[in-house]
Image (cartoon, rainbow, N blue to C red; front, side, top):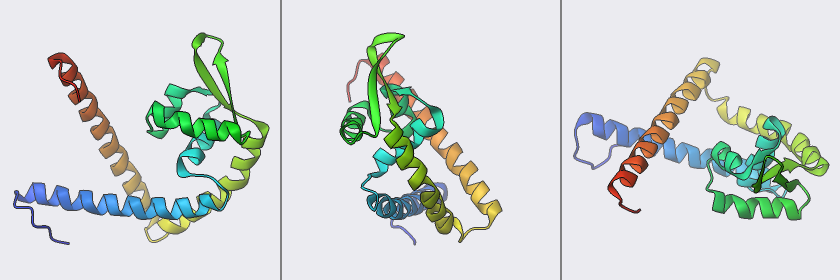
Length: 166
């Protein structure tokens, strides 16, 4: 879809790609949320369970970094999962100021029950693409995400150096 932005070709192309990427991500997230809500989970709760399932116990900071959520937002997600007996929050033996989050047996059973259907749903969404296109999309979005994080960290570092607050 053409846009009305009057920048140069590179700027218009980047803006158009951004809009398409954002819309596609929203549509994929909506589909994922629909499946997960059938199991009483939000996407953030699923992301926590999935990270702990694959990586083992993590600190709240590590979890926030893995699932790209703020620590503050994650506190509520973990509170709800803990209330539902899906995760356990314990003092980190190496750093008593921090908590370590781990799956309970109930949480492990839930993620093992949900994950196969979730993966099938994702695969069905991606079936519109050829396998090589899925690999290319994965590589391109990884590069884009890494660059966005690099620029954000660079900006934050520059703001610290200038004493400005955001």
